Length: 157
Image (cartoon, rainbow, N blue to C red; front, side):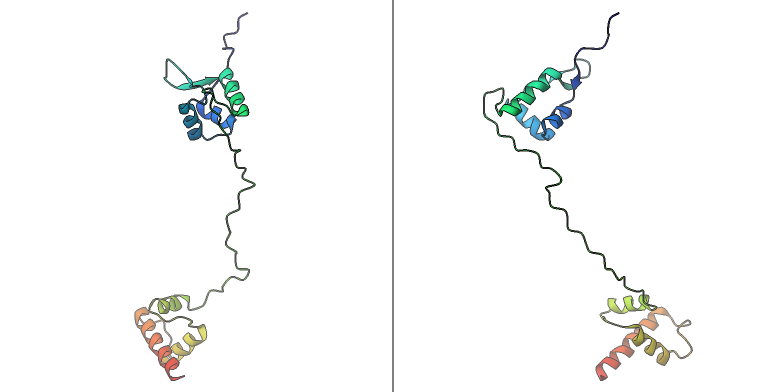
């Protein structure tokens, strides 16, 4: 009984680079310089590939730090992800800001330059300016009236 499987296994260039602990780009750069042997080319597809023997030769060259061309090559060991500094994380506030009852109005006032407005100030303005409630008031008019009210209160204080 004959075995139809080829006796050699074939590796892509990326797989060889991975086994050598190099990036594909660095592997191809070293191959171009003559440090590593060139790949064989599949006649049908035109794709480059390496045999197990070529992989062993590449591994040996890497271990000896000498290329096929006879030049000395120093390989840096690959960085491990454990040695890289962790990206700084934003600390979450333990206490989330409570949403204001008037958050939309406060945001509108911030846009026109009034910061640090409190719910108490807005409640005071609304109760004095709109004794019947703010529901029937145009939102733009509400922002304008509250802005002017708080500005007058702050300038008189």
